[in-house]
View 1 (cartoon, one colour):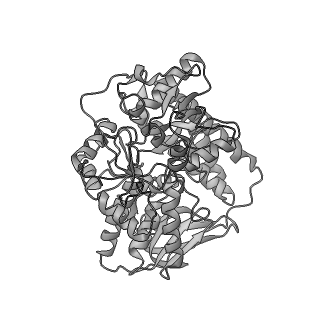
View 2 (cartoon, rainbow, N blue to C red; view 1 turned 90 degrees about the vertical axis):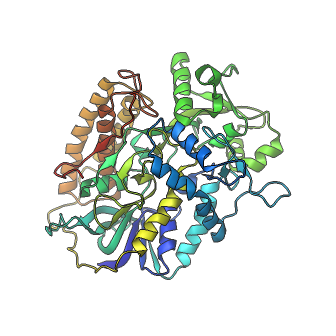
View 3 (cartoon, rainbow, N blue to C red; view 1 turned 120 degrees about the vertical axis):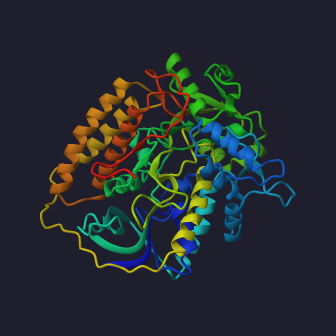
Length: 528
């Protein structure tokens, strides 16, 4: 059994930031499913939204966030995050993150993205996430108080309820070494879920393969409530190409003048919204989906070719190079794009310090629901949320009395055998992602949602039987978590009898006058 003061499950921006903020006075473990940089944070292109310009203000950023969130953003949370934005950016600059600057100027370059009324996106060219993660990862690896366990995947949390102690506390977790198959026991005074989102629930996503809803599913099984899982953000512009999957075309391309066009070159966004290409993501994604279905198109086109090639190479070097390698010269021709799942706006319900319903268990980043994003996340608010909540969780953990560590039971594999039909996992994985795309996509109906729910229940039974009888693998754990997360998405969507933000239902096309969150409570748990 390994013992630490704080166990952080996940190595994205939220997890690494928290580790560094705790490590000078705590013994910290970071477990990550693959390598330290294989997560969604490193894939983030656009940047981080914060009030950094004298032309901007907290109230403007708050207003833009609330408009994008379709009336469902928590006012206190939104103000809390926005007002701590500049300090969060200052901390990253102190760590050495090389944000882009203006020409011949010491000022940082700020770009603009859809839904923002001001230029407030600080960035490192068009690979902000990678630049930030590389800096933080190097510091994490060099810190003597941080232990990094790569190729480990959390199986489940160890709680007082599960051990028969009768308390509502988390004591640590079981983790699978995906290379050796060994399951280790980790005891911790505090445990943090920072596992990211659930994009791989769907067939087409901009997320990495690691985004399988692990933290949300693990937290739910332990007894945590979830909120607003129906709000799945589809990024409007994912590159459409047979040799490229999951490559995002940053929101900033539209922010710098990119125009969406039909195959014949006709611009269509002004037909759908007066903000045109700079409308929030839910509006743009639905408009593209409408035009594709109406005209039987495989994709639409994003045209930034009116900008000079030098501008494109400076501001979008990653996108320029990747497209050029595929035979698309964005300085001369438009980029074929389609919507794809990008962000999970719901998650484990937490307070302003990242605390879940279970004592000594925190959730930060995309696996949490803070109330910031409401019914639709404003572009580049996600990395900001990671930073602000990593800091608030760190302050809470550092301010607590030094609790004791508990000896925990080892994982029991005495009743299981090796699997004889591993193909079942890959088939179920494929089936789940396809029917979620078809039935629980950008536009929904009650009938489609009920079909999805029926299929999910059948998969759930099959996977649980498999889990009980065979040695577990990382593929099985991911599938188990995906199916549970899909179930929470569908339950939440069926419970919302209106269209709001990212949830659009043909059966309930109107928006209700009062905005309310969808909160689900695990079976057998008394709602707080």
